[in-house]
Image 1: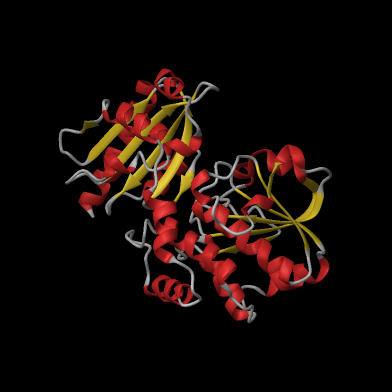
Image 2: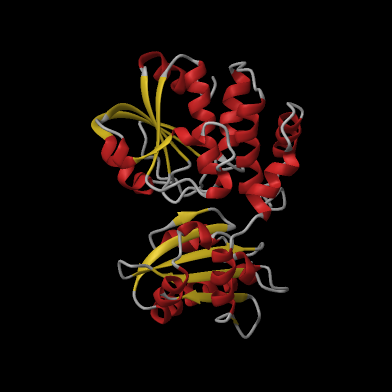
Length: 325
């Protein structure tokens, strides 16, 4: 029995389908939306692709990206929904209000912390990205993979593996990537746009964050702060925050990097990255968030310092447990 049998049964009934991914979409969220939309349209379905937030500029090169609509431009509600790369229903943001109370939801995701909110749950934690699962589905059902689809699938694999550098870069991922490159896509150009190109806004934010950089006495934890004032100076977009937390984790000897940033609603957003010891997905989950073992996040009430004290103790505790194993 295939893990996709329920999805195929769903598609036999569904003609008009809402495809949604998480708010503040990253490369995998955008790529999986476009890849799924493409495959559904090839299957003769009417597809509405939507996201609460704009597509980051660096992904504007992806084929079909202009078809992803903002919530306010979509009218009506939907009976059939495919949610991609969302660990829980709240991650859809305002898009969830487009979903009928009696809707059938396919939850297709790779986050270990996924709470199985769908009526059909295709959750594969060992997958490096949601596009990896979509690739499997396309291959199993003999969908032709030409350049437009390949560009989307490759971008999702590339970004969620950090350019094939993270520990989730499996032999399977590399085989999939090679097959996608064989279609004729220009992998080097995709990498330049998705991974290498930055804005002045990003660099100014990074400069502000690095000015707050600190390390624990044992050198295993590093953290940075971004206050509301700092972000307002730069007129920051969410896109500009991309990758900043990695600078804390990338310090020699550091296992966990953390970025704290103040939000306008009085919460502090905490972003985690880890090298190999601490499962930051579990740390984030303990504070109501989620993610992966090496990349996760949560939102908490309190000042930057108050939140840091709570999070720092939790990470230290996890490190201690790992050292005792």
